Image (cartoon, rainbow, N blue to C red; front, side, top):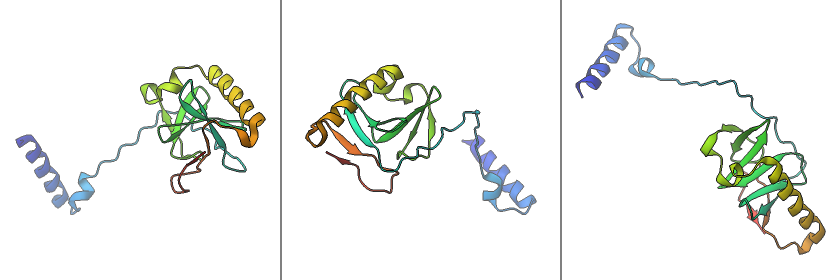
Length: 150
């Protein structure tokens, strides 16, 4: 306890000596740059259709050239052997590592997810308006509106 009081008194003394407000001296700024480039933005004409893949237990975007998934209220984007997450399909993207990637995505290699996506996309296009699988239109960001599942 005395250590924290001593630290606070040192900060206050420094601020008075330098004629700065206490918050100016006590401010903390953490910036970590590990050199992981952000993925390119997802550019689509309309919100992508997200269909449910039962085996991994995730939604996947179909009909677009991106590896885009939805699980646990977040969008996950696989690009350059790395996973990123965002609140909407347009980003902003944050790099995800290890156990932070949902189980359904890290359990299967991306090639196997591609096979499952193509199989479900085929069902979706063949069945058309009679498709009975779970699906919804993707949401660009957290303020666009609620996700609508059909």
